Length: 196
Image (cartoon, rainbow, N blue to C red; front, top):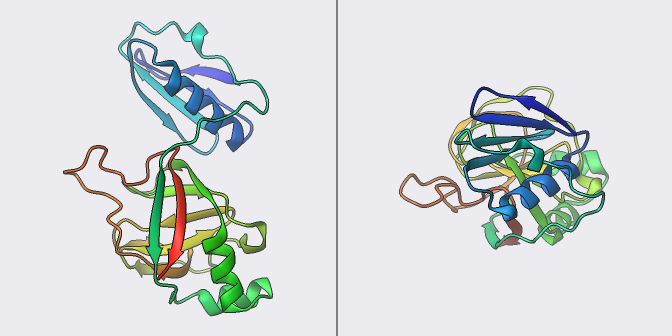
């Protein structure tokens, strides 16, 4: 782990692997240090925002294989009728039903959020479904699109351009300014996709 100053009220911790990021963010949140205002995980970093009083010596890397406290479980109902479902099945050498069973049978954890408010990058996608992003992104992906790319699963919280493979859709509201927190799936949340 490498710590980098990020202005007078933040420090950026760099890690080699996403698993280290998840463990550190979980442990540091659980520590409840006074003065910490936010802990923001990303793919290889954790940003710790504080009021200026944080002793950065507290920010130590969790032990290899450290247990991560499970977050709350959210079940997302999915209609598996995505535009890319047949091409994902073909690319993985599986039937459409097998792709649905693999995707909906896995346990996911939100590792970090990014791209747009409420877009959760979820780990736990079965290796058999790991595919690179589409060669040509779409100009329009509909709100609620359930998608995969590389080792991640995600749900588009609003209409936007995007290059992920679309497997289905959900009516779940991923971002709501009137909810606390606004994101349905903040980092640490466990997620199950349920076919409907």
